[in-house]
Image (cartoon, rainbow, N blue to C red; front, side, top):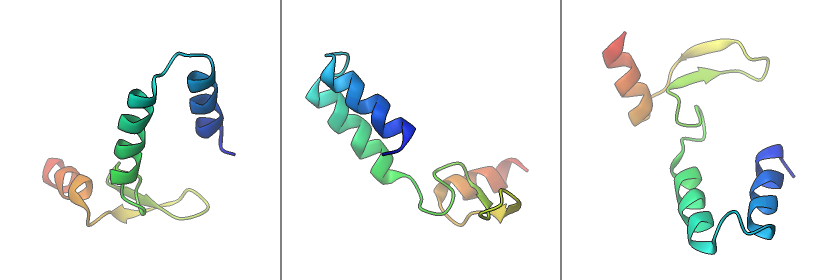
Length: 65
């Protein structure tokens, strides 16, 4: 389980997040691009920057460069 997943589990278990808040968070995560995680920057497995993504976040980033 990732650190983020463990934190979310703890928030739900301890009552810091309601089920609705969890569903909202999950919907946001599912919208993230699989290549850039919604940042617009694409990196390889070593962390080296490979370019700007073709998703909406990448297009927005490219417009600001």
